[in-house]
Image (cartoon, rainbow, N blue to C red; front, side, top):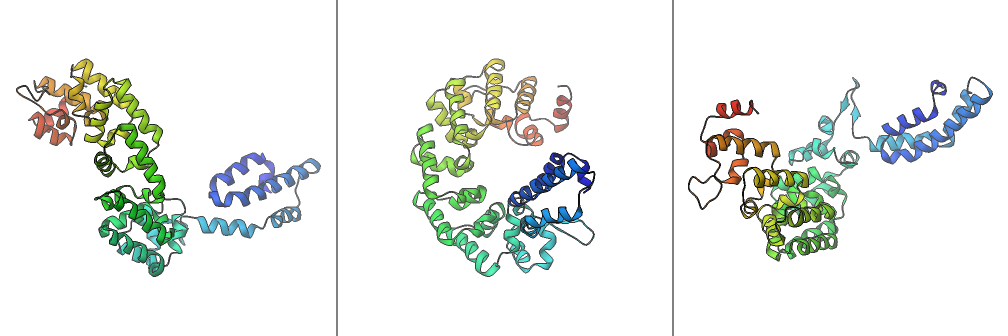
Length: 355
């Protein structure tokens, strides 16, 4: 009734913003009828009847709304009112405590939509254990299997034959390091074998990979299997036409450093412009060191400028005093100073303050 003094749209938006997606249908129906009632009563009087409001509530069964909210909530409230996470509930849940003992990261898992009610209602012996064992039989280390469950808890609601079929696909396709690949990008297991195969085929045609190159690139950067194909195609266009490196160089760069395919195009353009315009590096040299294109432009610019002041900015392996372009832009500042610049970290920090 307090809300009767405010625009209906205000509290309608507030309630829907707070509600989980699965409960919004019931809430929307209740709110529409409640707002209609308030509008009708406001037209004739200043107060709405409590009995009328109760009638509107009964018409849409608030019990259904409440149960939807409870079943989709990702946290509970402690006696003090503090929000509790799944890890907080582990002491009172044998299933959660067993998941933690197997290496599952509950804090990571509960960030996935719908994971909290799934894990709270999970039966350890009949639902978790068979799927975890299947991952181990596939070749996953216990840590890798736990990583997969932590990042993709919906796997625990996936039928065993479906999981087995998806795992078998990677063995048939020649992915020797598939357990490692899946632990790094577990959501691949949400895709059917047909979908994965179709995406890999498109990627192979796009970059003109051989079968071995495709498997190697996917293993080194499994994100390319789930990343939007439009982005992967856009990066190739950037390399081939935007930077004018050509199709052969684009394939070489993608093989040498597969994460290049999921990089930001803006970063590629900025670093390429710096390397060719300021440091006059040949495109072939850049193509042999693709990692330099995906690094933060500020880091690349700072380190190369520092090496220039030290007279160490010679990146041609055929000439004396050669410095690896890849090593120049990788590693921490301390590693850079020790392995490449041959100076103290304090000197490099002082240089950075002048920029």
